[in-house]
Amino acid sequence: MKIIEYGKQHNDIVMFLHGGGLSWWNFRAEAELLSEQFHVVLPVLDGHADSDSDFRSIEDNAGRIISFIDSEYGGSVFLIGGLSLGAQILTEMLSMRKDICRYAIIESASVIPSDLTNALIAPSFGPSYGLIKKKWFAKMQFKYLRIREDLFEEYYTDTSKITKDNMIAFLKANTAYKLKPEIQNCKASVRIIAGEKEQNKMIRSAEMIHELLPGSRLEIKKGLYHGEYSLNQPEVYVKDLLDMIK
Figure (cartoon, one colour):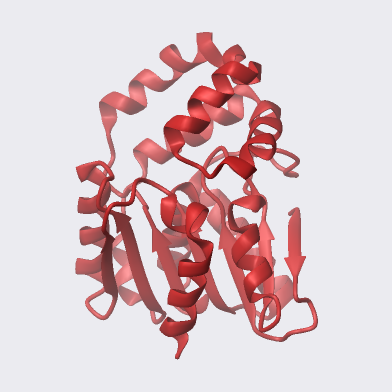
């Protein structure tokens, strides 16, 4: 598993799982801000640029990260945060291993399957896959995603490296993922985040996770679209994280 690390001299491990189609730099700013206090680990999710494995499923990727934590960090870490696809993988990890971390931040995890969208991904995306290597198209997508401008070159470079099969695989997994009831056994202190401007499905997903984790904290971030919290407000994200662990 490819990882990027900050603050390796510290004992407490903080891990961040990036969104689909992005990479470790999704959480680079947070890692830099936290590196004076924590050992920050940023895995590259399966099927993404420079990863060492194709994407098979959310469940498989979650299992691989748990195995990595077992082998490298003694079976658990201090905190795990995830965005979108990374948040779905984190949600699955909390369902698979109730004590995988002490704290968790689930940002914009869709847990309500969409059969129609899932069925349309391969026939609609397959023929247009070549467009992701076009810079003009990447700029359109980047603007639609509302990611801060300084990340564009890395976004374009890494998105262009994702194969068509991997792109289809994680897009289909994202739209098919269903919350597992085992998450209610989770022992971590959990914050659940969604943006006020996100699709209703995302807000309902956050509410569903919260309902199964009665001790969790649900936050709907006013005025924010999908991913803007961790991608565009790293200072706020880190402040909230530090407040959480206090």
